Image (cartoon, rainbow, N blue to C red; front, side, top):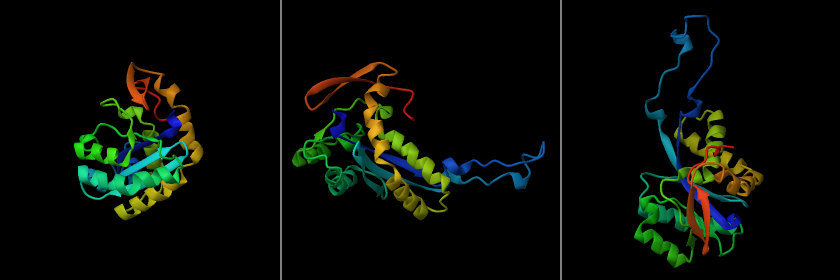
Length: 210
């Protein structure tokens, strides 16, 4: 049943985030010497917001969100990328789309857009970000990007798209294949519906980053 779900989410990636820590060889009591320190960058030196999606068949589109995301901008991203991603991944017309309950996702105009496109939306529990397996891909992406130490936001976006393209189909497939076992490992159960059938999953689990 999970093989026909197109998982989606947004994430923010800081320019100087995961790569801000450095290690040095130094003598005792010299940790504050200038040569052993790096200057701090206020607010991480800037960041970009990304929207992406994936299924066990691979990754869908990865899109940079320009400016503040609102309902209109979200619908524009869906209009330009959702169906094309589903087509590229050969999900057919019977796929189920997953999104969280952010207000812009569930706004009346957005839900009307889904109805007009005949897209089934997975019923999703509130405040359950750790249920979404795309969080694993975001973690993979951020680690890979910051290993390359981008120096500006243009490089950051470029590296994100390059590293997203490198994420293997097998990684995507494994995340979905092991999804039922991982969400059942910890926490209490939450009910939701997928194509008319009722399932239970946990609202929290500890091993999201496998």
